[in-house]
Amino acid sequence: MSGRRHILALVPLTVLAASPATATEQLPADVASGWDFEKSLKPDFKPWGYSVVDITDGHPVRAGRKSLRFEVRPGDCSWNTIGHNDCKTDRERHELVQVGDLQKEGDEYWYAWSLYLPQDYPVVSPVRVALAQFHQHPEVIWMFRNDEGGYAVNRQEELGRGYGYDPILRDEDMRGLWNDILVHASWTSKPEGRFTVWVNGVKAYDYTGPTMGKANTVYFKLGIYRTFVSHFRRKHGVAEVPRQVVYFDEIRRGRSRAEVAIGRD
Image 1 (cartoon, rainbow, N blue to C red):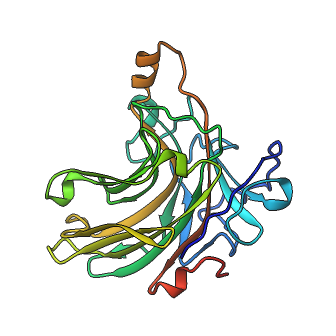
Image 2: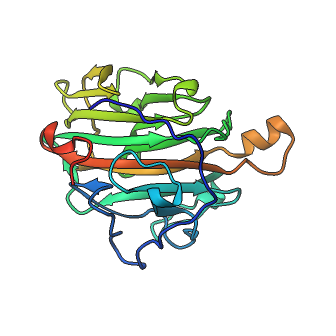
């Protein structure tokens, strides 16, 4: 996987209607393949939270005609039926969460997604911002974060060997550009696990050791997830954290690198 595409300008937002409220979101084949997703924290998931958008309306697209647009506005928080409530825990988000055939101990998969930040995308440090994550109930195990701009692989403490925060992209290399992320993961709670990341075809991160905790399954989430939003308000003396918009495309999972190649539909 390699290559990056500049987008010179965006026209005002015009979106294709998201699929009706069903258990599984119907994502186009030229956007996603190899897995299924549903909305995360559904009860108050806003209409603007995510949309399938089209290149003919001026939206950035990595390949094909469509991509996914995510947006979080001040106060975009929700909850679930098992006791988690973003509104009570200083969080805001709009994400899609993987459902159905999840990763388990002993699995080996390739993953790919392409990420685009508009030129006016605001950095909201000291808020912790995740733009994709691998999760186990109830804990995150891997995050791809954008706290102070750029993109970083965040290995969580649950995996042992300390806490990792490894930058793989600079802020100036993300604005107005598509960046292609490729992950090869051997999922295990044992020491022989592997988690390798390429950015635009160049290896940027390589970890060996436990890649999951003792929970049975791993699932993927993508979108915008902001934690400790009150820190921004206090630091800057403002009432709200700025709105953020990001685009994802070529969201693939497969058993081989070839199965997640850009443009495969």
